Image 1 (tube, helix red, strand yellow):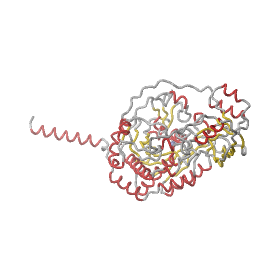
Image 2: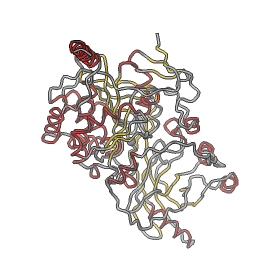
Image 3: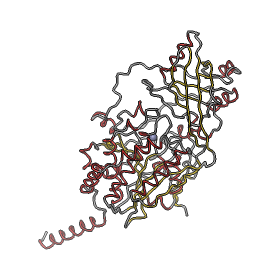
Image 4: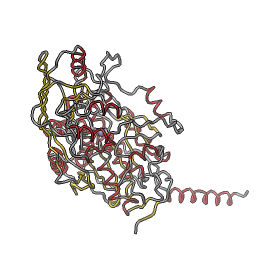
Length: 541
Ligand SMILES: [Zn+2]
């Protein structure tokens, strides 16, 4: 080959490389300087714990449709405005159902000896008709024969409906961080194999039992707290009935009692010694405004302002504690991440939108509503009208028998959604929901966060919270890997879910990581890559 031809080839090659490089997006690289600025603001001028305290200590637990929930919406909207965010909206997310609040509970054992009792009402159940004074009846109903046995015997009674729950010593530590070994296990993605169907239906369904208690006219139903319920921890949510509780009016009054006290009363009854209990519960159901609402706020984008990056947590809670770890923590991480970005005067390319979702605990009402309103749904409306029983049966196929996704225009304009809802433990990485393509991008973004513990990308999906409605229809939606600390089994859905058990250092770290992730997503040349879907996407006209 002659020299001038060699030279020509080299020039051609250089041109080719140059033009290839030019036509492709620049490689992903973390903006270390911006991460440094986020860190400086978030660590030195944090508002997170003050905001968390006001929301949980002053406003308290947030059952959808309750006056407290309404107060929380207004407080959040004012906070977003105070921190300089724009387009602050309390936005309807579709019908929710009944609201509920508890105003009063008082439970005492007055014979054979006096003992004040720790107990909490179950959301959406009615209050008692005044103070009930009487002997408890232990009536565990599982079969039709049990129903017949107690027929006509429970009118106005204090009915113990569960066996006592043992509280043996637990030798495991209450709180823990994810070890190197734990993180390694999270990375090792299990290959999904359909498990054998072991489900069996109870002889008496939840609906039948609710109807039975109502017809029998029970005074109040009492359950022992279950799960890890030692040292006065009371688990109280309303999971029975596939989360329908918020739709069923007139459910008999039901309270959950501390396990040790419930067991003590059962032991006294075993001696055939009379027990006298006093129980009074006052609750209110609200049926005027059955609409659910999310609170959303923006930092508007610049050259790509029509495109979105979203971050969120759920604003509702159960009512045993104040919903501090689940999920006021998530919302305050989101609020703080937005405050920090705004305080730094960030001008993101895409619009960054924060969302506080309603009704996650009852079935992702807020996030589902937002996704089907703004981005789309399937032809079978699996987001608008989810069938949770079918969902349980459709292994790895949340779209059920939908034939297509009907996408709204904004479907093609949302890059990604980042969720925070696994307690107040610091972020150790991210679950990427089997989206292989985001791994190299997130790896780069995580490099400057390594020294604050963010090291792990898990390909496997994680379930159970508000990133799912996005994920179901193909929008990149993620939940972070968080240190469990004492979330399970001591805080989640218990009376101990309070400010005191939120870890300040973990939440500050989480706000830094959240801000860094949404910032990089907002500044990236391209939107985040999407994973393949099992059905086609049709653009709505
Ligand atoms: Zn939660």
